[in-house]
Length: 342
Image 1 (spheres, rainbow, N blue to C red):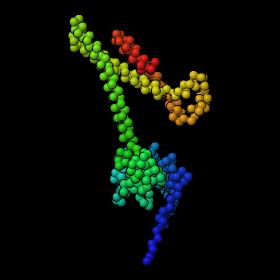
Image 2: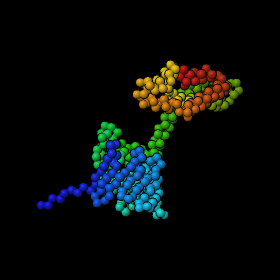
Image 3: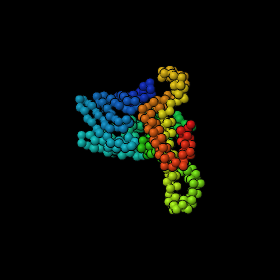
């Protein structure tokens, strides 16, 4: 009986930060990898040197230097940064990926980067996401190892699932938990903000219209004084819409004020005449990243300027409304008091 021994085809090497920095291939020259933050920047294999040119996380080009010759490849990608087209020396090459990243052998790829802008492993064809943290198998459409954040964390119930079954709209560059691609995340965020704004506007309109019902009784008096009823009703609707506009400007003022408002500990330090250095030394400040982030946000010039402009807009809108509807001055002052919070 002949016993077949397993052949070690590749041995991977990691640095202290658990990033894969190289691999020793069977009957081939070893590979070394260098990173810019979490993105592959340079790869060396013998005399060949591959350099990646990117904008943020968007691959733009690849440069190959070998034996004194330099070849450049321009890359065209989609929203998920998958390399779909490459152009080198006038020769264009197209690549086609399935939703989970599998591609046929006929679909060539002269770029190191492939599906979702990730480096494809030269031995297994898998994608070692998180720079070697977890291997994703595009053929099986799943990870080879379970997620440490599953089943009760961000990894989800299925510890081996990739992008919770939605690889079209989500990506998982670190192999930890999926996230929406940039365009989709902005759309989801904008939709949520729009729905929230519409709900607030709806509440404001309903409240204003309920209060206006008592005012509509004046239309009969206006009619007796010779003013047509339809004209009086139009004036009532115009008044309601102007009040809604004032409330919206007030809401913008509150949002801008909240962004420019320093944390309580900073306001306390200011009342005591503390310097910024003394503020930073306070236990409640230096040990709380959220407080530090809130303070930094409130000190940004564009945030301060936005708050100043929102304050001016609210003052001007209030004055114009009171001038147009002097009979509502008392109720308007109460509304302003509630919005400003004093």
